[in-house]
Length: 139
Image (cartoon, rainbow, N blue to C red; front, side, top):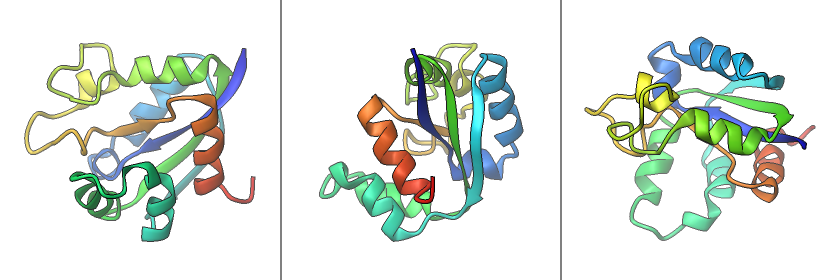
């Protein structure tokens, strides 16, 4: 089933020059890049994107980290792209992510935290639709 997802190369990935390698892996998996936009997220965008986490202990540090530099926002399309990209990304903790995944191969144990784990990928069709609307409001 062809679907779309939002992928973010987070500020740590952009800062380390890994955006190209991450995009290469997405394309090598057979997914199509529909839109790509480098931008520094505003507090408003992040408040909408992470609305379900407001009030949780990690919310403020997450927003601060995500505003610390540019992120690469990507709409990718393909057969089961949501599930496929999440498998390609690996578990959120780079320390335990297996080799062959983005986080396993490229993530750092220190000073990285689970907030600084290179990428974000939508977790469902509903999330993808919502998140794409937040990051790409004109599409």
